[in-house]
Image 1: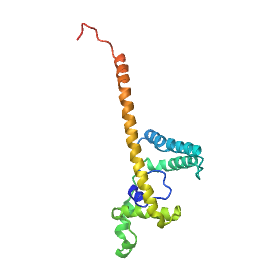
Image 2: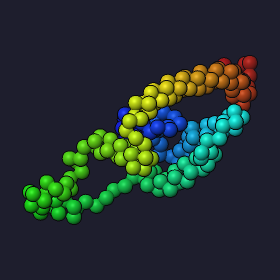
Image 3: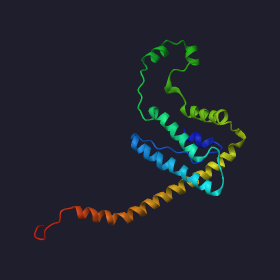
Image 4: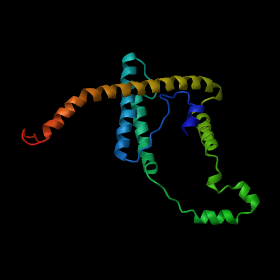
Length: 186
């Protein structure tokens, strides 16, 4: 899906699309806050200071994204196991000409093509974006990619600096918690 989004980007994408797969809902919520909520609210503050007013506002967009995530959470954070015995029997009983029309074997589905069609359809029919604007959207996506990787480098640098500064204090705190050795005991 990410590959399809990068090939046929939406015109008004705010950030380079990427995904992190997590199973723990608490880690998911932390990542959602750090990677979505805080950046959108910061962007809202910056655009307000600059005097621009996007429609919808970034705060509204953040609320909508959280509502969408909440609605999809039930499906996204569970492992699904479907009973397929009946579908298998039906597929075996289909006449060859019907089997050619009604593909009931998910193993033969070209998921890459399916995702490409999904993104193209969402772009055209849901967002009403024109195919003529795809080159401009791709140029924007390239800039967002550079910004994404630069931000990641900056965050890794900041985290490493913070870790280096915090390490001596953490070691002192751990040493203070350990029982003191007596001089005669080795």
